[in-house]
Amino acid sequence: WEGLVSWVRATKAKVLVGTQITCNQTDDDRDWALVLQLLEMLGADSVLGVAIGNEMELLQWKTGTSEECMEKVWAEGYFYTQTLARVADLDKVAGFGHVNLTSVFGGFALSQEPFVDQPHAMVATYLRNVTRDFPGRWAYSLNVYPYYDPGNGLDPGTTDQCTQAIARSVSFAADGILPATVATFRGRIQQLTGKGDDPMWMSETGWSTPMADTLPGANPAMAGCPEFSSEGTFAKFYEGFAAWDLSVGQVKGPDHVFYFTMRDSANFAVTEHFGLVKDCGDTRCKLKNATTTTTTTTTTTTTTTTTTTTSEPSGAACSAHEGCKALQGNCCPSDGGVFLQCCSQVQGVSTTPAGSAESVELV
Image 1 (cartoon, rainbow, N blue to C red):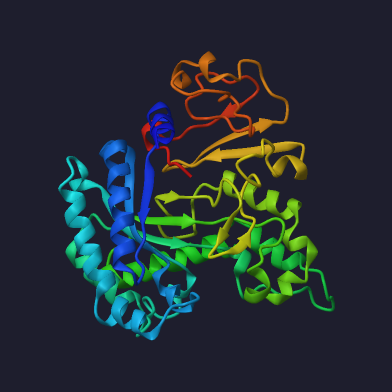
Image 2: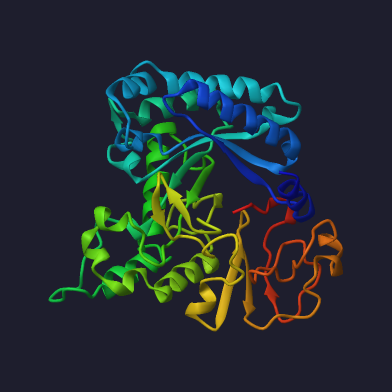
């Protein structure tokens, strides 16, 4: 963790830190103890928020989840009481009494209005409780993945073409899948709280290349369209994300957004390929395979984008830049082609920061 903390301090980033909620309290408590250690190392000024549980409405479909588990988590209130306990522990740590709190949900949470409220997914009940308990401190978070949108279909009269689905999936205009979903989320929050400006975060979005093993189950039609999970479509989605101004039409857009993810990973032992690089050993971004001009981003509260070319400027070493001297290796750009926020001066790069360095998020 020392390396992570050094990077956060050097770049003045803010980190969203998560802790698990499962049916195993021993494992959950062990995880929380480690998270508390990390939070203390980071310090409150470097923490954007603490997320308690991730996509809990989907736990019912995870392999090995029992009916007893579901009863415990929702009807018996384990998820809610653990949230209260985690916040009580957090508030004992110096400076953390004001840090935002959240729990991240996925698209299924929107399947009822304002939010799903079924025996195995009592999201609306949970959110009403935490809204009451932590007024002004709770941030409403949603993961949005056009990649998995069930409304995507093949082009009429084709068996393996999906140009229309790609167009609406990679669009960041108000009628694109992602902005439209976020706008719906804003409306649902307003139904719950009566306000149109509560803290709202888009906690994950991304695109997979090659195809994620989970896509055939989510949308067989898109699994049958080679272009859908191609490097070219991956690049279009990321470039759209990097250029997005966070607007979602007529309602207030998200305060923070997060791109998933830095490297490929397994989701409950199922392979996905949402990473900008394949694994920790790779030094080449997937985008460089798809296009000669690479767009990279670090997202701020008002979106900051940095566009680079594939040619590397001189002075890449961290030690050559005042703000990066605490780091080792190459920073401007890194070996993966990314310019860190600590870079004091970058040749051949156009930066248009609209917010302060203190608002940069770790994504």
